[in-house]
Image (tube, rainbow, N blue to C red; front, side, top):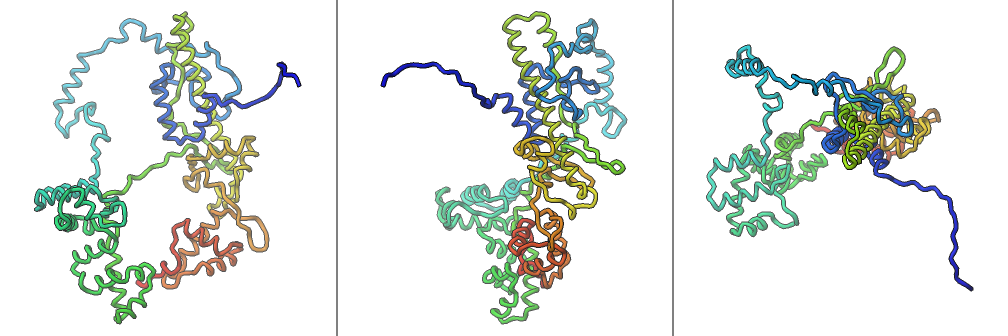
Length: 497
């Protein structure tokens, strides 16, 4: 067998993920806030990108970010370099006298503003913005440190107390890693005795909010019972011995064990229920996150109109200054730099345009499938999968999945994430059109909301009520949906008072 070299021709196709294509795919799954941050970063890094002045419309094919859904896609209508000429504003700036400032008028206005009284009629030009008047909410750490400085702690106790306060979690509990007593670990870290660490912890636990720096729920409730003066009564006994029965609402068992009337147990548990199981909650709550819809669906007559929300998104365009330099014969090195940045800018604008156009198409398809939901509400939400929308608009399922992630739509029924409209199906009793899982969850909430609090429905009873309404559902599915909705089991939903 002889060895020899041969040349062969082979024709093949392969998909190459260029950086531009990766950017376009990334833009699809960005939320509105993330897209705004990306646009700001690109404007800072690419000198050819600019935003039109307020009230000034962009020029050229690449001037704006997807105002109309029928705009060209990435694959069509290439943009020529001479599509946009330098703006008239730029030409005017080069004229004489445009940079002159009326200093006399400015100083007169400045003096008027500075000398005007706080309640006067002066100009608000130099007043701080509304955002500058906002105050920072005090954290649990700041609140405790402020009390620590006003309390009678020795220098050694204050050192340990600072370590304890610094190791509190968001709920106000004093917990360290491991199963051991955190006091021992703090004593070792501060190089003090355990007795000193215990004294420091006891003083920290006397600070506001009541129950702070407890090592577990039982100690937290005991601290609050001590503050109310009921530590040594029935309340304290129940907290020390019967927390599990309180959790499961097995109050008769507590009454039998303590040999006291059930009414007295219920009165004691009323006091326990008024206690705060998470003392630090008031200081660690997250600020409300407001949602800005990416797209609006308005009902006009009998039709639904889909409108993209472009408010807050920069209307990008390519700078006319650099285009003029490119056309007027810039140096070779500068020309290469401008051309590279120009390609990057045009691709970004087109990618954002394509993103908006795809969101528009997906939303229109969802509106077509979920017309009854828009007319009548959640109970009429239909089963829908990504493949249905992908086949309707001629795109891949992965593209639809990326587009519906972190995107919100404002409808006559409220604001929903686009993924909300994709649900599995639940069969009806005796056949008929299937129901969406969200519609079934809504029915579950209605049933639980209408039950007698003293005798809540079991999961099996909910199944029977669902079947009476024509919904064929298993008990394990009811349990799963109940957990998703945060609804407790029937034993914990029962109310004695």
